[in-house]
Each structure stands twice: as C-alpha cells, then as structure tokens.
Amino acid sequence: DTGVSQDPRHKITKRGQNVTFRCDPISEHNRLYWYRQTLGQGPEFLTYFQNEAQLEKSRLLSDRFSAERPKGSFSTLEIQRTEQGDSAMYLCASSLGPDTQYFGPGTRLTVL
Amino acid sequence: GQQLNQSPQSMFIQEGEDVSMNCTSSSIFNTWLWYKQEPGEGPVLLIALYKAGELTSNGRLTAQFGITRKDSFLNISASIPSDVGIYFCAVHPTGANSKLTFGKGITLSVRP
Image 1 (cartoon, chains in turn red, brown):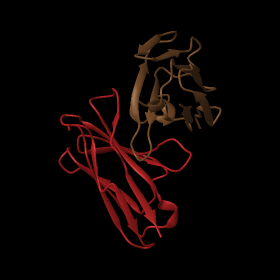
Image 2 (cartoon, rainbow over the protein chains, first blue to last red):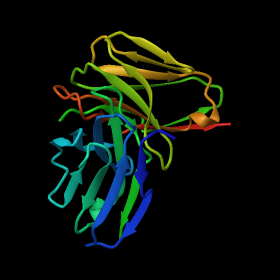
Image 3 (cartoon, rainbow over the protein chains, first blue to last red):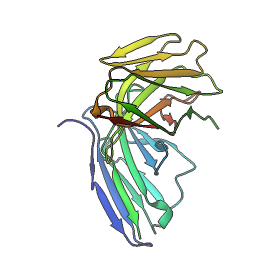
Image 4 (cartoon, one colour):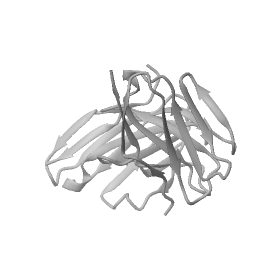
C-alpha cells in the first residue's frame, strides 16, 4: 500500500504523559499536513510542512505540541503533558505541491 | 473566521434513493472539495472542483461548484449501503494554498 500511513492507530495515555505520533506520507509528496478531529467536527488544521520546513502553524497548536519533519519524509507530532482536551483523532495528509491532499487513517488519542 | 455550513447534520435514506447535500459559505472560494469519511478512517477525496459552475462526476457521485463561488452541492444517485459515512465539504481558505477548512459534515445512513 502506497498511501499515507500513521502509527500508532490508537493510543491511550494518562494525563500528564508525553505521546508521539508518526506519519509516513506518500512517496515524493513534498507537503505534509497535520489535522485534529474531534467528534462531530471536521478536521481542523494544525500545521504544514513543505519538505523539512514547517511553514505554517495554527493557533490550535499550543506550546505543548511540536511537529518535525527532519528529512523531508516522515513526520512526528509530539504532545507533551497531555490533557484530557487533547483526546481526538490526529490526521496526517500529504500532497504533491498545492494539489489534492491525501489523508492517512489517523491516530486516535484518548487521554485518561 | 471562514466557516462552511453543512446541514442537516444527519440524513437517512432508503437504498436506491438519490440524495443531495450542499455546502454554503458567506465567503468566496476558488476550490471546493468533497470528502467521505468512514468510522475509524481518514477522509477520502471524492471530487475536487476548480471552476465556478463546474459540474463533475465520479461514478454515482456528481458535484457542482456554485456560480457565486460561495456554495457547492454533492449528489449521490441510486444509493447503496456502502455509501454510509460522513460527507465533508472543504475549501482552501483565501490566500492559502496549503491548509484545508472543513465543514462539520453530514452523516448519511442508508436503509437496506
């Protein structure tokens, strides 16, 4: 399968713990995006990379959130000191240039 | 901020029926996208519209980009049980060719 992959698919953690998610985009896609989705809502933009450069960050991305794409391929999203409000589906998408974004299956985070 | 309006929140139809859903905004957009999301998965692109007035089909799906550039509709003909899911419209916010802004989605149920 050559689509966007995300790992893990599910993560349950206790409040205060740190978590890290990984996204592998479609090969050769230079753009990578992170979104967050809560129940009953559409995905909300968090951040965007073009190659290894993080070009845009949403105000939703608090200081506890950090994303990297060190070699312009896979990306990680880390949440430090998780809070119950961080519980959501974290979606990754990739695209070639400004064209169609293809989404991965998401990582569902539950913070207890 | 820029907001996309999708209503109703849920639709219930009989297998074989056609269904139409629309997406409206008070702002003008140059690209309208329709995604479908199934439980536990990421959104999948159904149709992308790039030109006002454009009518595009993808199998039993047809979508139109409103002439005012403030709305779009998606029509599903001869519905089948696997059409069940959440249908989102999405746009690129003005001035941004990166992130997508999504509506809240319409949950479609198909009765066999």
